[in-house]
Length: 294
Image (cartoon, rainbow, N blue to C red; front, side, top):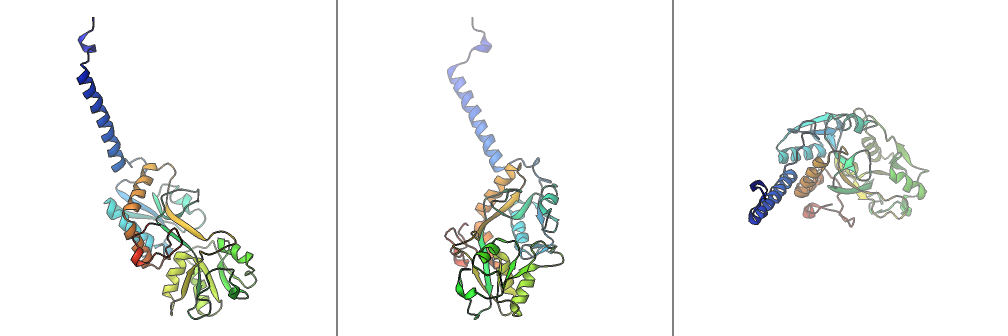
């Protein structure tokens, strides 16, 4: 004999299964749209950004850098308060900020660096050649160009384009600038641009955001050419995303969604700071094409 508690009407059983599946689907949707970040974030109510206190055009304590502006944009979209954990971006930066749980995101982090987990990229740029307008080097597009032979070229020691310079025989007249510095007291990029303006060097090679920012500030403005046509040495084009802790999967997914939904606004912020944006075919992204993704 079958007891009443064990008897299941087929229709009732089907309805129970459908309700269970619908509930599971709703739970998954709620998790995707509103992930529980209480375990992953220092404070779920605050967007805590890891940043350098004196490293324009990226960030500073006054909130004047483009990574500050991106933080403001994301805080607004997340409806969170914005706060910072500042530390000089030198040796130990990731360990002392993101790794120490003092903050939850590094606003600019290159893809391929395994010190942290990286979101989808939100911009693509390259190292760039900076020269004076009318110097005869304005249309130089690659370091193999013969017009660079014998020129005094500024280069940050240990950066990828130093390899390209060596391959092309340009190191004899190179002027190196230090890679590891305390940005609170010094700036290799600013020193290089000052030397270029004063005629102490003929050209400068800088990371794209630095090149664009300082070239605009110079009087008169300097000419910037992204080095996207290198045929020897490492490629000098990079995708930049945001860095989070390896375990913070929900947080990473939320940031990826914010990047995708706000790419036009992100591009406008970057262009306002002179960042030479590139699409996937190495073509420049200007104000008229700023709605494109990297």
